[in-house]
Image 1 (cartoon, rainbow, N blue to C red):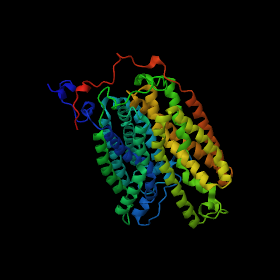
Image 2: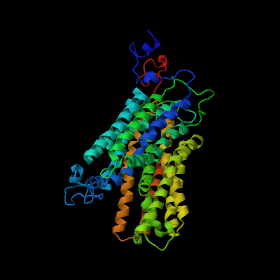
Image 3: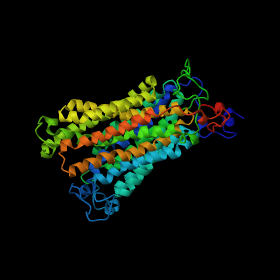
Image 4: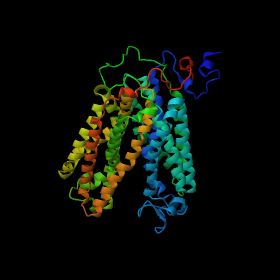
Length: 520
């Protein structure tokens, strides 16, 4: 019986099985991060889906030949309150969707990302990253195809189901698929390794949004906005790259270490010397404290990121285009276009810092530690948010923009640093599954942050607060969230010895791992 058969207990190892991707001697570990990037750059397009909102908002009007949006009846049954999604819009083919209708896909993306990562994180650890990457590709790209059909027949519920639900599941599996793999390959640079991969998720929209615009312009006709064709084309392109990434994953042999590397000084109590089992990790206070830390850091950032352009326009008004005496409510159509262009540039700058922060802060955490890195997030974030009203009052536009670019970098840095934080606390064996469960904090923050910002914004406008003062209270509330995050991070101490697996405890069930051949 061959070693190949022995590894599978007498049966051939399947192409997607974990045993199949054990790397042989001399494998170059730097080939793994590009595989992770290939997947993350594809699923990161979730951040860029707003590029479809405007054309989809006039799809029926374009098909009718008018080119103008056709509104759904305003007296139809409404979900989610007075300003909500009408039952007519959810199923109708004779009226256009609003941005509010379409925007719920963002919520579905991140709710199902966190939920699927939590539910199937343990399965990923058992089956390996290749199988998870393939399933992620099928879900994300299949969801795009379902959405394409939904757009072609103009059914909003199919958009939600396709990209929101099924695509969201693909997001979750694709997001966590490289985490434990990279941490095992880079025990000497945990933060940098996960930062490289998760940087791709932040950068997906930087590539996907321009690509989508190019494709929509290519496919559009006088009676079609070209969105469903774009979904089909992007699904095909993404499928090729995601499958390439999935098949590029490799796992190290058990006990493998980088040549010349020795484990950190055992006096560093913040780095675990063993592994906490997946079934026990959530029973520890450390898990929930890190959950709170991530949730509050993301909540304080995601709401502002979603409102970056209007925040800048309302706060600084005509100063954006050289006419400081003009308020937001006094804009002419031409001034509104100028302000929107500046706001779009600000959002682009935000995105660059979000991307760069993922690599910078995660790499820095290798030098100063994860806990100290999160201290930086909360202390610097408090300073930036607390100073923001003063900077706005003094009309210091450049410093205001710099402050929020720093906040964007720490928003991205929080995502990239947390997998290494978990590995330090709970060991590397189950870190992918533990990270999956922790991502429910992201799902929570994806609702909490925008609700706080949008509710306070709308309620203060309704109370008659001038537009250039609307965000002041919001900045102070977000400052309070970061203070609470600082306290939660302060309370994190090493995991108690009783939670660590004994040497005789079963490891991840991978039979014959050492004997498995490194295959394609």
